[in-house]
Length: 445
Image (cartoon, rainbow, N blue to C red; front, side, top):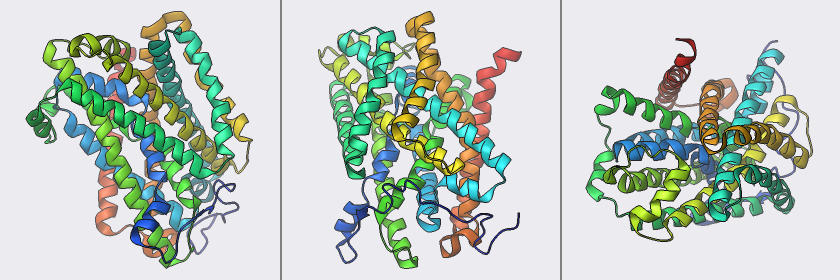
């Protein structure tokens, strides 16, 4: 199939998330801050994916085993995320396509279908992490058995639907509220754990021992591989189109500018939360001889006795529950965007959410029933491995499209951004390949 003059094999048929497309007004002649406020929101929804329960295990392990050393890895991962999310929002704003639609309109049907399957597996894996994280939090806070907690997570389908029909700003407000809860919880944990300031600052500088120490390298790659979530690239390219701005070069330039500010600030907020998890683990476990703590439940049980503060464990569990519920909300949207974008078919939101949730609940239910707490921890790690496997299949098309002048016009990636995107992509691909090798080599050797 030959390419059209705009670089696409197929013409665009429908808007991304048509029920909320261009529904949030942006003041044409407003001040800088009014425009920024109008564009604020999508960045926070994307940032949720960088602080979901799946990241907690690697951050806890990194802090408990190696102190503050791996903070630099979280920072580097965050910088990578900022670059990739910028490319994602730019693709959506400039082309009027989300990443799933762009893949459908550019690749052949077999390739597009394969990418869809891979993405659906990744979303199910991400949903699995949210189910387990929420179930663990419910168990820790209320004493409800894990198996019942897994089943309770189905109820959030109804809660999400109630707010989804009220408007997109309601969803963004819920996300912002839950992020505030998580931020407040870890600010409290940071205060009561009393970490050492100078080692934290030193930890921001990459250390050579990260490369030379095999165990540290493995955890570092795990942090990097689990940080950039593939479904976030699809999500961001869609939800930036909820803003109502002129779809000409001037309007697109303004939209890219403010959406990038929103995204960058939000992702630095995610960096603070992720770094806080590692710092609290380092201050609480590494310095007290509990370096083997890597399990969320063990961390919960030890926080209060080690810190001598009665609320430490409860606040930790509240943050985990807020993290799981927040990720649930954005995962719902990502699933809708991916299915509609790749297949150009629409399901009712409740049906799409229920299908995705059941796919996640079934393995979580079985593993919890058979193996209990330890099984859910292994399942949480496996979900991150699956996400790592899919990431390259989202990053490569994104970089390809935004580097194509026919598709992007004057908004095509500048040379410095293009080569930076290539380098980041290669690093992510190589590190994820290494992570997969280390994870599965015992199966075959």
